[in-house]
Image (cartoon, rainbow, N blue to C red; front, top):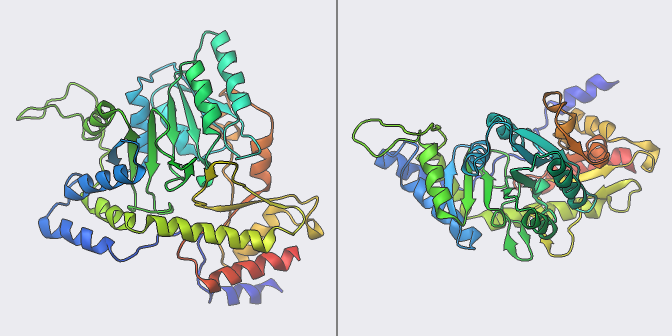
Length: 388
């Protein structure tokens, strides 16, 4: 019975979770790079992209463009002096790139559960982790907070804790460019913040990232380290270990074009989220990641929780995902918490099972800004075929 359905689906275009969305202006900046032969990981587009980002974020920040968000986070840890044996607190419910650079430095990740309001790091368990590690003589050297799926975390409470215990904050804003907390752009709250421009992000440079800080010395050093830490000399002189982490001038050209339509992309993603909420909010067992007072999310991805005890016919998250997959529609579970990952099985964890339940029941729906009316209707039809 299912074979004819599959054959029919093959004729329909794939609806992706979040695919790149060009506006056309990117080509002009890329052509400038080719015309001037600036194809290296330096050049006018890189400088211009950094300036565009700093102007957008405001708060007198400086930006160093990198070839990935992971590279940016690695540099942030280096800038804060994180080394072998140090401990760094990190939100458990996140992509692995938030945690992997901790291990690059020989440090130990300490994972913290999320809280129900924002699905981000729990201030309660964060303080519990800080106190417990201090009691063991292992005061954390940094806190990595994450704005999951573009939703601001409880920044005020977290920054107060960080200040009380004198622990620097790295703000992982990889998913949240365009989001705000009390009208201030995310990516401007941490001592250092990082951005990502991967192909699935709200704007893209194909692959890319950025280090953000009000401290110009951090940014100057980030650029130095990201270009193989080459000292000022007529020959290749190196007094520090460096990395090949700078963004190419061609990719930065894509980013410059994307910056022109960033606010439009945020508006469209929020419209998509509101459409999903209008479609599903009255269905028992379906709930959403909600904005709390003072928070404005870019809604990078529209995410639902599926409580199969309450849904019609006890539909589960996985049944819903597979039904969409058969219809050639990409949907994904939320991030698997880091403390459940085999590679981090021995890392300390503070919390209960909230992030675990989000993983079991959470589903990311197609949210790309290039999603049209026909795409949304097709997704809606397949969801409602199970839930209504």
